[in-house]
Image (cartoon, rainbow, N blue to C red; front, side):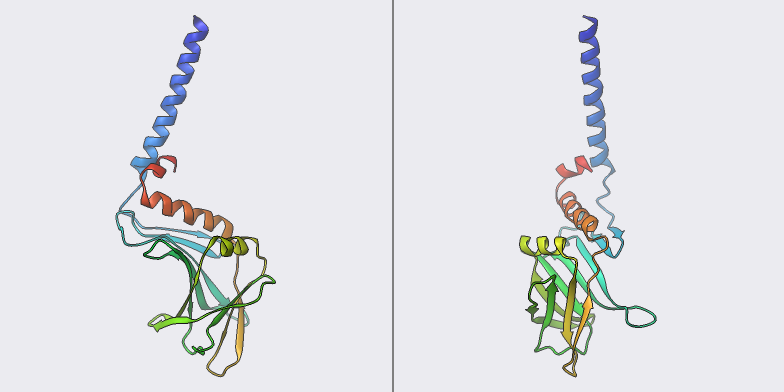
Length: 188
């Protein structure tokens, strides 16, 4: 009889702790605030959950380290488009040869060329589909480079840093899921 009371009390305590933790996840999630987290060279930025239009974005700056003061040359971004498809976008500087497109080399794989979609006030933009194969290739890559040609026709290559990519990718997927549904906020 005494053992049964201990077991029932222990189970009730565990259920109470679990429910309290889950309620804290839902009640503590601020749907009005945008979130930004930095993981070494990568950033995860999410709009407020109350904003139905936006999506979380995973991004990194592509740096020119040949100068005494390294400077940002381009940006790589992974996000979800309006149709729910994951895409990898590249914002490159003005003064690129548009007809040549931009190249992406992942490890020892051949260079894949993507055409520019447009140039606007931030630079020239190219997009690539971010499917499961590309995600796996990037996760396992030790050498990724972005290539483009300047107006003089000379190709340039800049390495893409993957310092912090693994943690930021996991965070990006989790934050996007929590932003869309209250159920997953229970476990945050």
